[in-house]
Length: 179
Image (cartoon, rainbow, N blue to C red; front, top):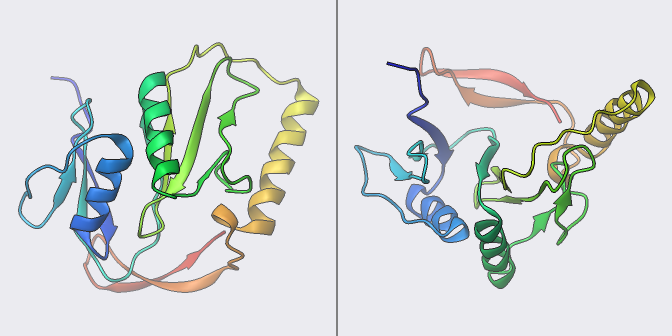
């Protein structure tokens, strides 16, 4: 048997509301609860299982969708008044990402009710246009400065201690939230 990812757990304050939000945005349905999890399962059968937690750091989740599904999701986001962005730093609201490195690649980012950054992108043609060494260096510096100066998705957080729950012990731990 090959190894496959079965599910990922998304911490949330309200599992039902967050699962419903994602399902509506992507044109999916909320699955029946499994124990205390509220799952949403896309076509590849890898479920995102929402679990109630009071304290957590946002996690990034990316969904691959066909061109029509991406367009439909964008229309649902716009109709629902949900802000979407053209980049992971969330600088350009209401815009669609268009790759300069991969031909015909586009997508968008948005946040769920708990602040998890969600990404939707189609498979694209996957013809990667390799940057020159100078372009690659500029891209790395641009990205570092963009994330450092603005934080993730527009917040101006600095590195501060944030209480988290250790996945190993289940007890509170302290970690630094880096922008």
